[in-house]
Image (tube, rainbow, N blue to C red; front, side, top):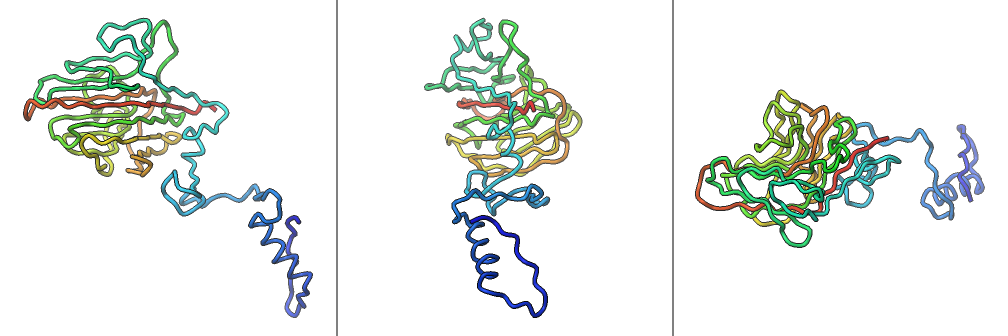
Length: 290
């Protein structure tokens, strides 16, 4: 059976068994998928302009969820998507760039090392003046531009853990920024967005080169593995997720221009002599080229 356009009824119309079975029984079976045919929605049927999702769930991994964010780079549904995955197979993590490196650490005074199976580790001493350690990709052997355009819905996913995540003596940043060579976490005068740690507080944040938009707090525990995902949707809003749960949506002070991903751990040169270690892995960045 196929969809049948229901008949128009007038007052006093006698509904026959054929009317009922065609308009109600058969059409409902079709809509439920019991007719053995593909269900085709009209091309002008769109989700609510307020939520832009079909289904009740707000978790992007739950059944029935659809959002324009995840119709874009998240699931690579565009015909032209630039995707960058970083296996940590560098020849060394030192300050001297190797022609064979896929990524290069722009070192501060802290340390960077391998962290086991396809992982990297940044470490700084909490009371170490000037201690900072950052990791990002640099171009090797005339490689392609490593930046991602703010207008092309840049997306980043990273797994991470910080053994002193609740310490007030370090800052950290995982995300996109315009000045990846800086040995400090992003500031008001910089274009950036991502997950930010300022002392003991974690939150989503972004900046437009003039002001910073600090979002809702994120709960991050010591020595616990997390997956952070972030996306700047068509230069209109930033969304940051932790383990699939939305931390915040930011719509003000959005970055512009070209951005590079970066992971940074920075000492505030206060507190005791503890060493903080930020372990990261499974880094994936995307942008929509369509």
